[in-house]
Figure 1 (cartoon, rainbow, N blue to C red):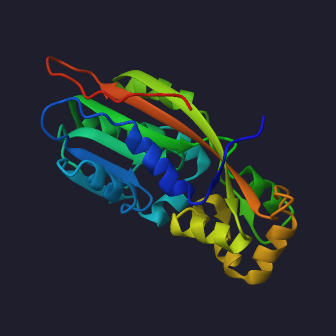
Figure 2: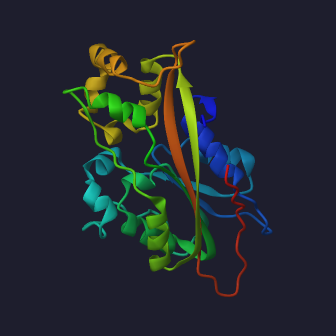
Figure 3: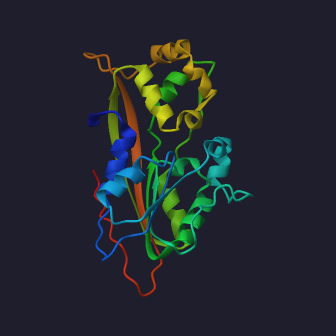
Length: 258
């Protein structure tokens, strides 16, 4: 069965999908924290959709993310406070984390989200799944100048971690979509604009060289035959969890598998 196909840009499409899952059933506005690679995409969309919500946004330094090893991202908390969130404890009704969970030290991040959320608060996340960018990963194996280094784990393990942190009722569902690109430069520029190039590839700066991109294109296997457009698989996990509640109500976020 073929995957649904969309025009780029996957970052905007996923941000829209994440925001569609928010339903403001409480009276008043929800204090919202947005955490992502670049803090002007989903934060701006959220502010337009729900102008009554006070939104604060934060981007982790790309250097800190790039220096984090795969073992650190899945193991215990890091030794310093580089990944602490810059929000006061018990100050947020909603934390939205868009397409960055895969690159974070998960125990530290889960602990920080729990800290900044109020009782009854909601954590809403999107994260890349194991099939994401598989065409680029396969093509890069043929190149000696770069290497695909990202490793996307199972978000159900993240759900178990949220439970251990104190969150309740974590739910995860998955969406897989094929995005199309007219050329390799357009695809690369989108990845760069999203702040992902150095997180996906070693020596990512070499992709700025046209010869390297041409070589990558030469090994790209997923081409639409009639139009010769490049097809890119993006798998996304959408997750939700609640901080343990006492006597106050909770926000409701509908989850519908696509």
